[in-house]
Image (cartoon, rainbow, N blue to C red):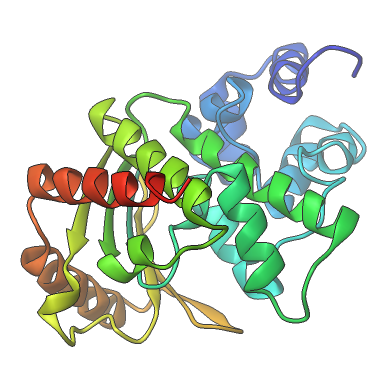
Length: 267
């Protein structure tokens, strides 16, 4: 494909086939919005999506073989389905219990997580590829409007010195920058609040323009995508309760800046 990007090549093949984005979306069982995001380089299709695009456009597996990320370490098996959905979501709401959510992580923080909090531990080239894969997820923020992202962080996420004081200060200020740039909303749940409905692990909620919402729950060694409406609604309600107990955004930012300053004093 030379210097042509994946999205450029998809657009060229679609136009050569005489199809509009909507026609391609209908035939590949995708949304037109998702096709537009892929062509603009803001999204990466899931492997299944790429296979359907190949079938519709007759590109003999090229869109699957050259899908961005194919040369990198796969994500954990339990996260594969959630990753594909993350690329298509119009609204994402994250709850971080122990760590900053993946696509909000800076490189040094992601490296520390994958080095110190993975078992078996990753090292060398495998960790570098895993970090690159994680950083690729941040491309969902390239569009200034979509997806709409809200995050609630347990204060423990900010207090745990992942990667050391300098890394933590940089990570926290990165989050502050995303909020000040009006790209995400972020609230901190104070440690003093005590137990809450999401204390069992991290949660991601996603809404789409062409399918029902889903919830993803992850623990230390497993993760599950939920699409059963009653369960998704129950998890959404738990998230809403936690959000209601969190600090307002202005107070959350003040706390984050204070914690980042404390880390900076350890330089």
